[in-house]
Image (cartoon, rainbow, N blue to C red):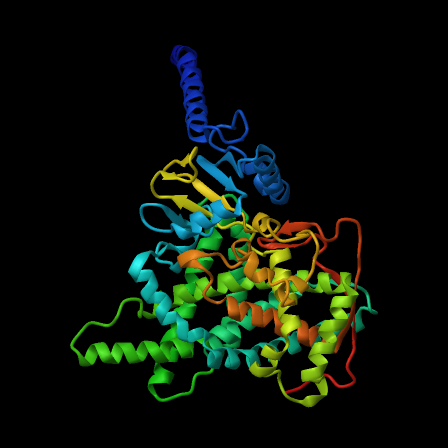
Length: 510
């Protein structure tokens, strides 16, 4: 036995130089591959084998992406390179280069992925991974979800949920003696209930909503975790949570079809969608054709999850930054309050109508400036399906992940871009929304531009209108409180801590 153990030990010692040589060879090949892909781009001279800079990105995402932007700006190239978990990446700071990526989403160029490991997390069959005519056809079917009539239906639902949560915030503040508390998590909870109510309406029971919230929280944690798809890891729990959410939303689509088939009036987004979908299914059946593509219940559930993902955390970010900006700019706050008061009163007993939302032009300008100044999703990752010549001197290699930065674009072109100034979107003489349209990329551009941007802006306008009308608030400021941190969209570092008291004599009820 001793002789066998000694023989095994000697075998390991004999193999050790070969193992060391193999590791060194792998390291050398990886470095050479990285430098070949990097070419003239600025980037680290050496990268950690396989992992690259992922530890820095997860530990301090704000610092990591700020570093990429600084490197791209300093070089004058508008681009920077790095390496993350076995993947070569290109950071894009320049607005025109970002526009070029957005305009070339197709099988032989760039593929939108939403997240560096999005296909594993969201599943293969997802709106953001579609191309060409199939994608155009689906967007055509989605369009009825965001007509003026549909947006008007949603506005009433949004206001009821917002007011219910504002009431809870005020009660909490009173119970805690007026002490300031961070509103990021309360905003997230409010937005989740708003999304559930607007998207799925009466088809989610109370228990289903609670399960929904648990699964969505698992998904949020998984977004920021290492992509380890093994039992017990956050990424695996997130993937399983998404599958359950899609099934739940698919069941909502099935129930909506039954109700719309019976002649019911649309009460939420899925109703508007299913109303048109049923018409197309019936027309196909009458002509002896199979049902149109993308009309299966669970597939629709997957697309609804896309809407939820797009709306949920982005809106949470924007609401927090809106409160922070209004507190920092009393003149803007006063103008918003005056404009809202001219068209609506908390004592009226009626919701703000679509016509009144349109009349609040300055508040709409504030909403657009909030989104420009602090775009919630700062980066829109794409993968290069084929090598793509991005500039005259650089070709993005096949398989590289590119990160157009809509955050950096927001601070290019616009005069005094570092200043929060709603006048840039309100003043007829300035018209910066037209002059610098190509720098305003918070909702993307090209074939995958956000289809629900009008809904998103309406939500922000309605929240601000109700918030400033029924609440007096004061930001609890501390050093660095407004530094952006990723959660996974950017929010104030302190979670936007505020003191709240009721402003109106009678709290709205309708």
